[in-house]
Length: 119
Image (cartoon, rainbow, N blue to C red; front, side):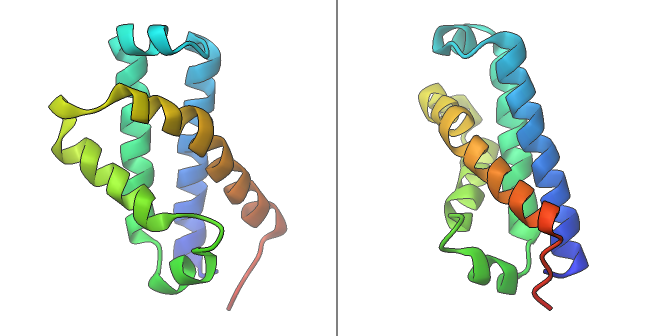
């Protein structure tokens, strides 16, 4: 992986950790998530930032890791949050935070810990 991809993964990792901390702080409860606008907004902004960073990953990196991570869906989630905020489905954001973000965090951990370098 090139240095630019590594830097973006470090930032993605940080946003995943932020989401994990929000879930720990506010609770793993969907009702709380929907009713507490700060919780919803904080998670949504992190998901948006993750998508923005994923968009900046090199085509080569996304191609090499596409079987491990659905980059197109991650980027699409960013666009959905950015352009249809008033119509966001809180359940989808919640499912992303609870089910998909831990997987992305693990993916980043594994690449960043090993210092994997594909070049």
